[in-house]
Length: 119
Image 1 (cartoon, rainbow, N blue to C red):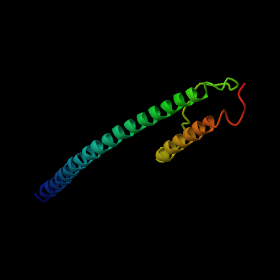
Image 2: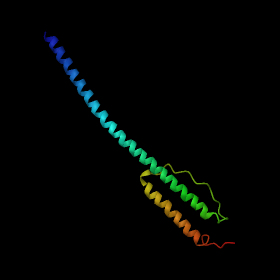
Image 3: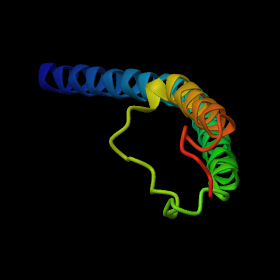
Image 4: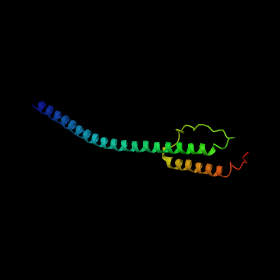
């Protein structure tokens, strides 16, 4: 009966190891579910932030076109497509740069057409 006891001991060890793996898998599944909720929230916030940035850029572009409308000598072009190479980590600085460039444009046009005489 030694072979039978050895067999039962081996099977008990395998069963115990399988039970431990199942328990670890359950715990890991719970952790991953929590992580997924956090990632989903982060993704929603990132999408909202991107939409706000797109809206801000669009509004500044439209305002720039209105500002330049009186400059008949200038060729106005459609808004360029977003640069996909830009690091999203710098979005706040880039939004500030868009705002600053618009302010500079507005101030320059207020100085009577970029310093050129109007006809």
